[in-house]
Structures are given as C-alpha cells and as structure tokens.
Amino acid sequence: MPERPRLIRREEAALVVIDVQERLAAVMPHRARVVAATSRLLRSAALLRMPIVVTRQNPAGLGDLVPEIAGLLEGPELASADVRVVDKIAFACTLEPAFVEAFTATGRSQAVVCGMETHICVAQTALSLDAAGCTTFVAADACCSIDDGDAHVALDRMRRDRVVVTTSQAVMYEAVREAGTDEFRALLRVVKDQQASSSR
Image (tube, rainbow, N blue to C red):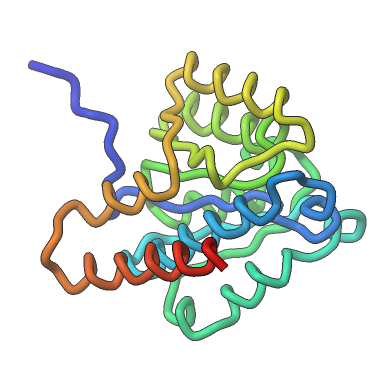
C-alpha cells in the first residue's frame, strides 16, 4: 500500500510562528515579504481553526513582535483563534519547556513553521519536530535570514531531512482542500488582500 501523502490536514496541523520580532526584523532584507506571508498564514490558520503557537526569542534583547503581527494577534480576525505566545531562550523551540507544553496542548501531529532566522531557530525547530514524529512543513516565503545564502542552505538541509519545504499559499490551499465553500471564499479574500497590498 502506498505511503500516505505528506499533505497538510487542517484538523491535524498547528501553525508555529518563530521570532518575528522588531529588532530582528529590522535587519532582514526580506522583512516585508516575510511579514506579509506570516500574516497570511495567521489569518488562514484562524479561519480554518488551526491552533497557533507564536514564539519570541529573548524579547528583552530582540524586542516584541513586529507591529503588523502583534496587531493581527490582538485584532478581531484572530479574536476566537487558539493562540499561545511563548518566550524562549533556546534556538530550537523544542528545547524550551514552555513551547513543548504549548505545542503538546494543541493535540496536533503536524506543524507548519515560519519565521526568523531560517538557518537558526526555524531550521533547528523544524528538524527537531520532524525527528520527534511530527510531520513538519516550512513555508519558505514566510522565512528569512540576514544572509540569503544561510537561508538557502538551511532550506536544502531541511528538504534532505524530510521536512516539507513549501509556500504560504500552498499551505492555505492544501488546508482548505476544495473550492466552492464559504471557507474557500474567505481564504480567497486573504489572498486578494495580500495581492492588493503587494501591488501598492
């Protein structure tokens, strides 16, 4: 019998947003792209009732979440979403007991991971989650490093180790599964909102 395809199933998946923080984001060459893609994933996760775990690495040093993400988490679109915010010191989220507790509490067996930096906290977390038996997806357009070379090598490494490297839009369409539903129409608005803001 063929292996079950490694597709995102919204009833099994949680979104993990890693360290999209003010001082870190300020030095990222792809800040705008990553914040926009992360926002898209957050809105979609809330719409599809996927739990969300958001981390902040040493906020005393790296600051709070960027205003766009903080505002979204506090706004009406995510008001009924299952969101947990965890502060950490470890690079791999899985080494932080508060994260392990928060992620375990979601009851999910898949993780969609995004954030900063690709080759440090994102890669270490994704590889560790996958090694622990959690099917892990990384949305490449919602991740970045200060140096693009570091990000590319990290994405290649994750692919080799069976982490699924994908994109934010692919995540959205996999999770919603089919057209013609109210959820699909709401998801299309998220896509169109993003396309409109990108063209300004």
